[in-house]
Image 1 (tube, rainbow, N blue to C red):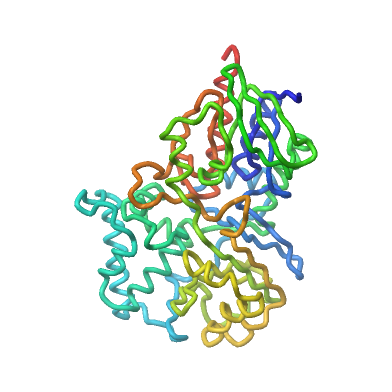
Image 2 (cartoon, rainbow, N blue to C red):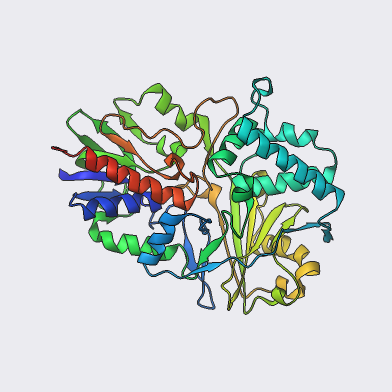
Length: 436
């Protein structure tokens, strides 16, 4: 039986960072990843024009210093988002003025959510959902604007997202302005080379210590160490280690059988949380032609509701990022790619120009259909649950340790949170080493 010091389950950013830090400290580490690629919820592709686009996590938020430092270390090139003051709201192909009543009403509702995030949801509100809040907002257009904006922010189903969970997440993410904002907010900066540059750099440093296509099905902890059982891949069988780190989000980690069983409060995270639904598409153009006339940061209210961002580098080519989240993301799964592209891009023509219908490249990913990630952007607590609010618990259970973006005390759910959790668990394991 193969023996190592630590097995890391999952080669997302958190697992890769943890493994690299442990390896640097002289720990014999092995990373097992069920997918045929590293990166987890980060995925970068090369376009026909040679540019790089992120189909998974892509943004470095303002103040996200850990991932900023990692990008600099690995030679990636940051650039600020091309954005206006506020996104333009399109309804029926018409741009709503910033002072339009529906926009003002939605702004007041967002201010109320911000206040609740600071004061806490009153006990009498119980586990009312985002849907129940939207139903109280006057005006169809204002309700729709809020639904699209908040779905894009968290990829939650409005009727499966409690106000308590939403306000806790707002607080953990630094407030609504940070969570929803571009310049100076969570969507502040991108990388010319894409997040794949970080994934590739970390993976290259691990070499044969990273194994792809190996799905972990069970972990046995006998008190003196752990035995990790895999079901797929060339090395399928068992690996013996002193400790194991699980970096998958709780709903995905729940597929692993633990012996002895996890404590009830830990096991409940696998059933009390669900992964968000999101379809992400990037349309690629020779140049960002829309910048000659307007901003391409949009909230489109017509079905399917979506958020649009100008995510191309300053000197081109043009990249339009389209996010469809929640139930709407699942509703477009049945369309063929050409039909889906027209559905998403066609209504933008009146605002951005007819060229928007003719990209030279189209890249898309439905994360809720990804069997390994399970969804995106992050794990969300079901209404009625009392645990699972970010950050989710990360205290070791015997020789089993936990990482992943959801466990981060800072910026949970973001790429910054994934890096922070990887660094934290590396310190944790180093402190637990024999003789420490």
